[in-house]
Length: 162
Image (cartoon, rainbow, N blue to C red):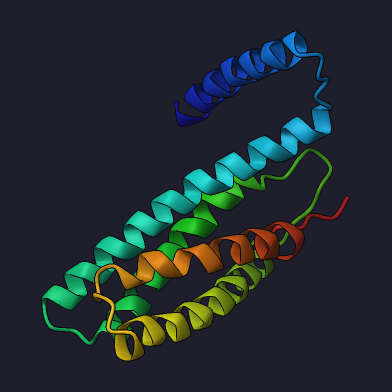
């Protein structure tokens, strides 16, 4: 059902964007549109990861778990969520392509681990050095980690072989 809904939304979006582009004399190449929609899907998955990570983080902090441990627990929940949805909808295999799920999961974890360590350093900076609120600091870190995670996932973790 989710796939059907997404296909419907993508079809309407495509028709609207292509029509508007045509009105102003712009031609959109199909491969550019596909890449753009992949980025949009990654963004939606990222939004769910962020929400999940943040909710778990806040709950853990509120029950008295150290903010760094809370962030780690939330981040792990986000990685599992990211792998499932990125593998199923964002970087899905096309016919004739091969991907080892175990390898993809390990690479996904490794790519997000880089983002996690970057976030942890930024979180330390925001909370301990600059005294930003603990519940706002992880959101600020996303400005750095989202682009890094997209590139690592697209170019490395979910790369398929023909």
